[in-house]
Image 1: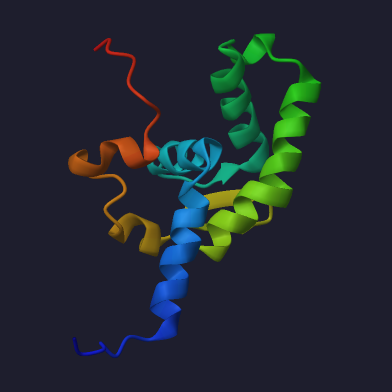
Image 2: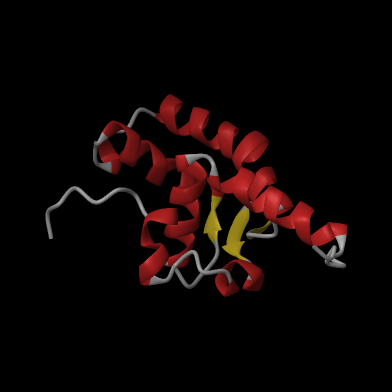
Length: 122
């Protein structure tokens, strides 16, 4: 079999994308950003994730839980998403990159990749 001449960068990019997608919180962030046209603050992302994980409305979430989630975003999740070129993050504002929107992450056939699992209710 002939060896294909592929740049190493391409392989590294996919490894970073798969690593970024390996966590359900990061997949949730991608879906959350996809549904919003404007940049989102890390605090808003943290609150949205806290609501999702605790199944409580925003006004019933303890501030410490939101702060904990925000620390996780800033130090773990956003750097991984940024390294994979899926989000741009600066001045506390996060937005999907053009690259992220070109990947088939948000198409109906790939719906389960970034969207939370469906509960069966529609």
